[in-house]
Image 1 (spheres, one colour):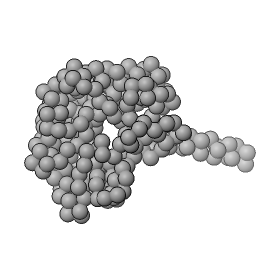
Image 2 (spheres, one colour):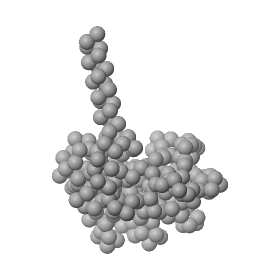
Image 3 (cartoon, rainbow, N blue to C red):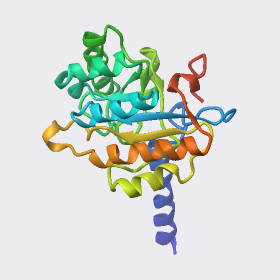
Length: 241
């Protein structure tokens, strides 16, 4: 019975630890923005892992046609590969967020290692646009000890998400269903325009491109409006718990 209890306690500890590091809603490793205020039928649209032609450009075409602005959490390596796409994102009124340079798991990384990933992307974006991102989202949503301090030193806000289309693992139909299933006012919706820091010939986000107009149409039919992520950010950087 003793060993059974030990296994149970150990399993619970592992589960709690993983929740603290990986659950989008967790605040254990520092404050993060998961959703905006529910005052009004507003939602924010975000994309991770790009830019990745032609999918990022196709997504930009859809957003431009519908007058919607979004936030693109970019990988520095992809920024360096596709500077023209980065320029277009900014020129069309969208915001850029930092999604690390090479899209690694941050678990067990030192502060120096995490800082290097973040700084390389800040510099890559700055060289192309003249400005650095002010928001950060960790790859896979996984945080680690010391990350919040690294972000705070750079004036970066930690942004997660409340809803996801799960488009990295399923087709367009399922992506639409997942994205709208529990959409509520204040939602921050996660989709992908790239696949980590992979080169374009290893990326296929055609199902996301196909799903996006349907997600937008559904949301608008329910009375939602799409707003920039900055509308959900608090005026001041929150302090750690």
